[in-house]
Length: 400
Image 1: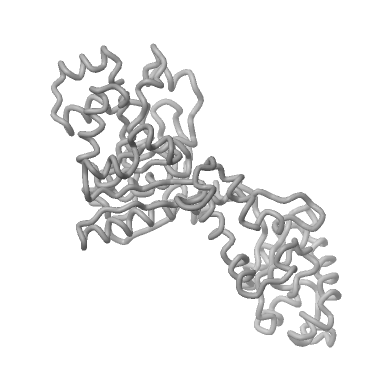
Image 2 (image 1 turned 45 degrees about the vertical axis):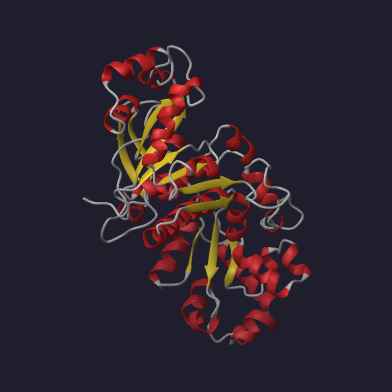
């Protein structure tokens, strides 16, 4: 089966989870991705099998490095730099997440590498973007999220700000999207370019609905958390506790549409004059309706309410924790979750593929590699280096 990105060669020099995951998304669709790792960082006597036997399953790297191969080379040494540059000349894309100054010191900067391949696409993962006074700040999601405005509005009033933690995921997808766009542009123009994606941008787009609203209309209300009982519509965006300590969420903004089916479930006569139209439900008697709903939902457990919502086809559900997707049929049927047979750790579960294509869709060809697992294969098959020379390079610590 062919992949949408078959034939594209990517060198992955990233270290952070989110940047590596962005590259993995491209590998899922068939790109040929080689992780270039630092042979100098490898401890003596720590072969791949021994390392796996001593450590628990590295679930983070399993997701971020799936469908990749790994070569370990010390590119600070002349022989290693020669190998590295030969790989650059074969690459369509290089992904780097080091600070600009460090990348320049390693000669991993765009100017240096594009001199080896002029049509190179250079994907740079940064913390705060390539321009401005913060361009060299560490690429940490907590720092980027702290600047976007979302953290103070997530909790209920008088509670500390909450770090949403979604910035890396948005940024990873944006990295993959930026590379795909640059590849499309190069196919038409023959030109390479820099693609820069930052955690600041990812966090800002994660808050895009609220942030765009603030930019458009401003107002102090957008800057502070809103109590769940201060929501403008008792039937949309409002949470209610159930008898067993769980929560339901209602998403029925057009109350006139949903009221006839919803009201009887919560013990209200649809013709009750207090709530007989949208204006009374959401304005005149809004607080009273919230109080009635608060009491009603606390009379039954969450399972009762989910069954009632589904039976009556209402836009509402029970709020779940992470244990729910693990057993959700839809998640497996759509390959959002995968059951995997790991050679060292047996049966494991992992996130699957968030995007489906009817032709050339994502696939899992290989689990995440050990460091240097494919060094010999790549040197021989990609660069034509014979086995004796590979052995010599290993002996001298140039590659692992």
